[in-house]
Amino acid sequence: MDNKKLFFIILLVLIIFAVFSNITSKYFIPKQLETINKLYGPESFITVDNKSLGNQYNLTYGELTGSGMEQIVKYLKSKNICPSSKTFIDLGCGNGKTLAYGLVYGFKQAQGAEIVEARYAFAEKKRSQLEERMRERVQLTKSDIFNLPKNYFPTGSVVFVSNLLFPEETNQKLINFLSEVTPADVIIIVSKIPNNLYKLKLIEKIDVPMSWATNSKCYVLGHQSHK
Image (cartoon, rainbow, N blue to C red):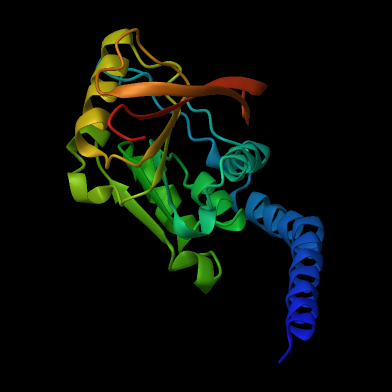
């Protein structure tokens, strides 16, 4: 096969891929989001006593929206990071809907940890109702996030924490914990940071749509040791 034929074959493959990607983003993703939002419904906002677990947490519920997940994926791609090779982790995943969003927007796997029994039970119930190819790629854990072991965090994972209402001391504890247990190449996105980032560093600030605001400020963190 001469170089000219090889060039045109490669060009054709790229064109087909671009067309398929465009069709997927314009048709399949909106349909999947519609299905997910219908499955979880308004009852997915489960309210509990904010102080039922003591003063360490504020349990007011808010979540990453579908548009928020899209924004995170756009940010990753702008940094040449491919979600299809990454695990999305939501610490304090609530009803688990953000995990489904993560799969829709191309993450390889999705993991969530939730401490509130009612929210965890709801998340498990809804996970069982997802289509099989999504259901098998979602992992839920009922746990205090500070009890998660190091092997919970795969290499190259993307960790999200909606910690805007955490008390100051809990936010510092969170940063210290993530500094110690996550791999060096992990990407951490949080909605609030303390003054002391310990072994982490601030990479960038981005606006991410959340359930309480369309442009909530989030902080992208990485390990100081990772270049």
